Amino acid sequence: MTTRNFNYTGRILIPQECIDGRLIKMASGPPGLEIDFDWVQAKKLATIPDDANIFVDVNVDMSFMRFNYGLFSNPILPENILLKDLDSYTSATFVVRVVKNGELLAASKKHTVTLALPDTKSRRSMIIPEYRDLGERPWMLEVHETIEYPKLVFNDKWWNESLNTGWPLDKNMMVMGSIMPSVLEGMLHWLLIHQKHDMHRWYDDPTWRGSWIRFAITLSGTHPPKTNDFGEYESMDILANWISSVVLEFSESRSLTTALVSMYGGE
Amino acid sequence: MEVNNLVELRILNDRGVDAFRNYLTDSASLGAPEPRHLLSDNNFSKPFIPTIYLQRSKVFNSKSELAEYLIETFDRAGLTRQVSIRNRNLWASIVLFYFDQFCPISDDGKRDVKMEKNDKVEQYPKYIPRLNHGFGEESLRGRRHLALTPYLIYEYNKHTSHKADVLLSGKIYSFGDDVEQTAGRIEVISNRSLIELIRMLYWDEENRKLLRGYSTKSNPGNINRLVADLRNQMKLTTDWYSMPAQEIYDNLPPEYDYWKDKKSP
Image (cartoon, rainbow over all chains, first blue to last red; front, side, top):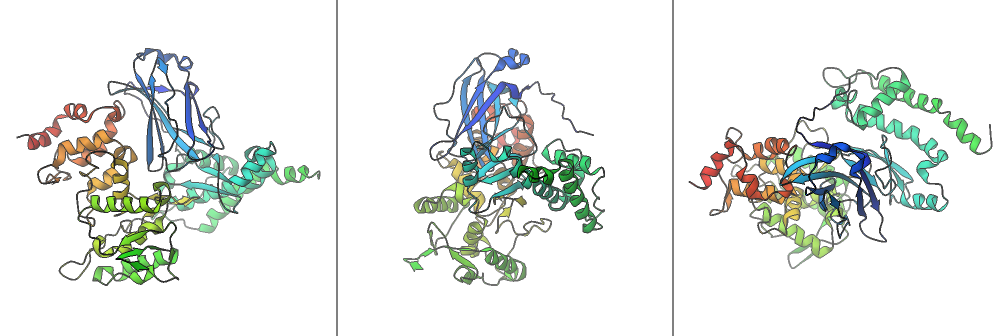
């Protein structure tokens, strides 16, 4: 059962279609965040007075910036759009708020953009690509308790080189086919082992956490073992086997190795 | 290396943090001296880049003094907030460096070592920042850390006239619910109207301290009610960021009259 929240505040939800946000890489320093608004995409916003103000609140972890986009009737890009006060220069999460005299008239959901997936037009999936200096490490899964979206972080050198070839890593079947089984395994480890104290929440969780669990259950056809009254698993082996079976089924359902072999011209 | 009472700070490695944690578990509460040698032993610590010099004899009378000193020191060294707030071992090292101030020995010769028994990630988050539990780039949940939290609050308010003194007035070893409630939320410490509002309600300007009972949960309109309950409720319909503190103050529910009356008898 999916949990839903009632919105009884009168606040209007600004749908994603109204917001065209882009994270823009600069030659050096912090990126810029540029947002265009298209209110025509949501008729219910027509009730908002022209002189309401638009604010874009951006945050990463424990850092925050607010940008004033002027009036609802005539949004204007702020003079300085650089995310200089944020704690990350490779991603940002933002919310759009429309306010008049302190009253919150409308707000968007949170949107996360990264340099690898810089615009909000892209449909959100269960993981977002990003790139960063990882030394010699090719990629890593980034997920922790307070993250807005888990990230598949590629080494920036690898990412940039892939762009030069016109074949971005996140669109490259050879790369993603090799990586994704480990990403899935890592996510399930994190949710079911590291976060087992909250495991009871994940099944109905409306966020990416629940999406990963439901995805795994669909693949496996069975539920993962549950924790006992003390919050512990009766057998870690059974859990590990369940995770392995999910990863195997994921690979089977996509014939990953066959696809990889065929890319070399094999059968 | 020590020059003119300034010491080049070395930072603990992971083994050093473990050794510091062992000390907190085993002997700190008995009043044992802190294992300062960890900060000079190559097995437990290493030089930090950029080089930071700390004054060994520096005494901090408040969290505000501590935060201001750290920000000035980091600025001088060219250490940005973006870099410093991701480094758990740096913050653990700073606490170890000034441990007698962060966890002083009381009259009975013991220390009151604060512990979070139920936290499976970090049982001593006031001394060693708690890592966000997960995979990937290290990030900290510093809201309970005795050095990182004041640093973050001050950093966000360093250009205001009051520099968040209302949240940073207490001793560096005491951590009221108020600081935990506020510092854990970026939407609070970055909201200058809200910090000004806290000042208007609970700050005793004459004595430069918070009014007695400001965080007592049985008191109406206490700071926890304001920052946690009321703020969460109001943010669904209002935008405190864009409202002057006076306007928020004038529209507070009647339970806050208790504090308004105290300030203007």
